[in-house]
Length: 300
Ligand code: SAM
Image (tube, rainbow, N blue to C red):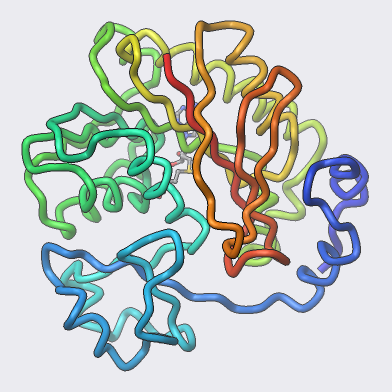
């Protein structure tokens, strides 16, 4: 796997970045498979007897996440088709901590998952919110919205609405949502181990384009968030322009407070502080059993 030199050079000085470890972890990519169980259809007790689990213990930052011993052929597993579990990358499940630590999930809330297809974060949110809450799960690309709809139906809760809108359409719902999750489209360097073709598509120019698009998406949806509402921003990019620099941009453009999360030191997640003092959490694949992720929480 030939990593772009420009990416490696651009990461120098980023907290937690270790050039040799980064190159190594991509040179010998470990195949990590994880699933997140659907508590509505599969009890933890039943799931822990599932012979494919690596250990009976759940993933450290999600009560519903488990590593598998190896990647099976999910197509042949009726439990997969029945929506008993969702195959999801382990780092992404950290969203659970972000939500649990910053929102009272026992209360009815209105939550928007703005960039939701194929549905990893939306199905996770469904398992965390109360029955009285409502999730709007949105995807702007029509073909992807259909996949999202199928996955949402398979998950089986009824307090979800799937929409196929542009982020700017949500501005009309002024001060409406208690929580907005923006799992932004990004340059995708965090998933290079899983998708080697993404390396060919990576360029400094694309990082800059993604950064502009991320700003546009956040600005478009901002009016829909209530005062004191929570915004969770995440990417699967390592580039500071799409991570800490976006936090700084949000901090300069809008009136926000950064929320710090409690992270167990044994999880090996790197907490970063942006130039304007915003907290972010980086998942480096040589420190965690998962892929690259960046996540941050703001209060409006
Ligand atoms: N949250 C999803 C999950 O956990 O399964 C993954 C989301 S993926 C990182 C980003 C999504 O943003 C893609 O589905 C993509 O189609 C969508 N997207 C692309 N351009 C967009 C735009 N301009 N505004 C909003 N969403 C966009």
